[in-house]
Amino acid sequence: MNGDQIFNSINNIKIIINNHKDEIEKLDQEIGDGDHIFNILRGLDELQNLKNELLDKTVDHIFKQLGMKIMTTVGGSSGALFATLLIGMSKKYNPELNDLNNLSQMFSEGVESMKKRGKADLGEKTMLDVLIPVSNSLMEQKNEKNLEKVANKLNNIAKDGMMSTKDIIATKGRASFLGERAKGHIDPGARSSQLAIEAICNQFINN
Image (cartoon, rainbow, N blue to C red; front, side):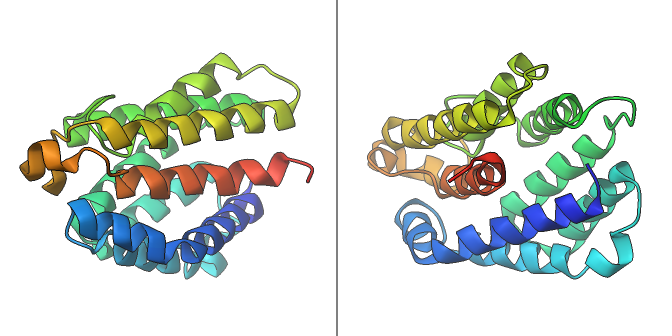
């Protein structure tokens, strides 16, 4: 794992999110306040602007600075949560581990930090319904040698997690005020998180 790979992933995430921005905006207008997609795209722009400054830095330094940038420039709950994810990931980097093992440990730490920050868990119609199952699967597969197999499994788990939010009554965020009316709608944060996972996984899948 290095700066080139990290910023290449950020670029791929931005492409896939941008391609689905109208869909995500519509999802957010249905059960949220409609600003999720703008916050996400703004955050990705801010991260890309750090490429020249951070490209040759250590992985833990890169993730910490990415998280700090999100924290200071992106509004909404998603900004605070994604900042927490990235900063949490920076704390667990171990240069002695291989990339998959490292990513598994880092992502697990980041997601746990998000859970504490958001006081949320699985089954509450949030992005964590995608990120927690993906984190758990990563840990289970951390010693797998076939990265394409790992990526395909994570893709499917992320999609299942995203789709599961459709039939959940929200207990967190703006959607929680809707009660039963939020049922039947996919959570926009879950969708954008699933797309981000898909963008990263697709880098390891031979099409």
